[in-house]
Length: 152
Image (tube, rainbow, N blue to C red):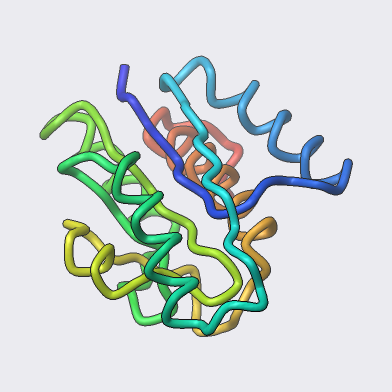
């Protein structure tokens, strides 16, 4: 069973985000050991470079050698390609850490440290929605790998 860690900047405040994430965490429990680590979103009154630096320092304490950042400039994968990516990570290292940045993205230091850079498209998403999208895509990927009809 693959270990998947998701490191997120900020926490979920709205009930609907919490409920969506809980549903996917429940569904994913049969496929992986999932850990979600929330690091503190930095003071919005600081200058952006300082926010990214401070958030990067917090993120760096939680990432592993096999990390994938979610960034707009990352590689876009179809759901089938993402399923293959998950399977290959499970066979290669047995673990992967995904990083979802805050309002200003992810520091360049973390991007340089990461082994993978992935994107769910050229649009900008709130980080709470990005977490739900990642969880859904993980679930979809495992279902594809299982040969389920969930993915049509």
